Length: 145
Ligand SMILES: CC(C)(COP(=O)(O)OP(=O)(O)OC[C@H]1O[C@@H](n2cnc3c(N)ncnc32)[C@H](O)[C@@H]1OP(=O)(O)O)[C@@H](O)C(=O)NCCC(=O)NCCS
Picture 1: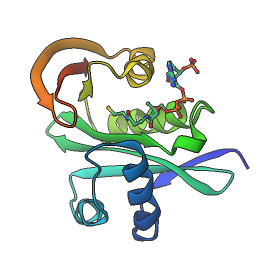
Picture 2: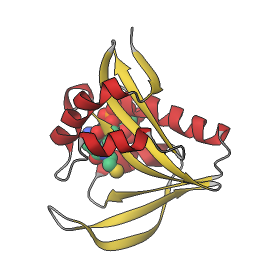
Picture 3: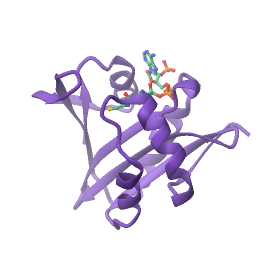
Picture 4: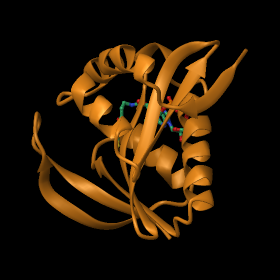
């Protein structure tokens, strides 16, 4: 079956919130994901690995810019190309919807994520000092224009 990518659905949300909790010190709740489904300016995709929910990513669109708010792959599904496949699809979807520039924030120490974004051409254009909590850390602000 391999990796497939489709839009986020209500039925994904419970499992997705478990993936979040296993991946972040300040995870998004199921309610936060449910709110997104109702927002026309939010686009969220999920990746399935062999038919099982393996990850999620999405953006909020403001004019021709999109802010990528969440990228996560389940711990047991990492390093299998899931992140790269769904992220490529997210950028493709955005461009189809008229997005000209993408931005995101990432913990400065998060080398796996920074490496993933770098492969797609994202570059660091600034630092938000102390942006993250648990633990407090600077955010690198990346852009793909
Ligand atoms: C970042 C993350 C989404 C990558 O997902 P993934 O499915 O493991 O990524 P892929 O297997 O598609 O790998 C894509 C690229 O990411 C980078 N990468 C992924 N894991 C890495 C690691 N442990 N160390 C270094 N680079 C890594 C590499 O550049 C890799 O490309 P390569 O295979 O050609 O080396 C995943 O590690 C994750 O969910 N981390 C926790 C949540 C998180 O930090 N999200 C980002 C918040 S901004």
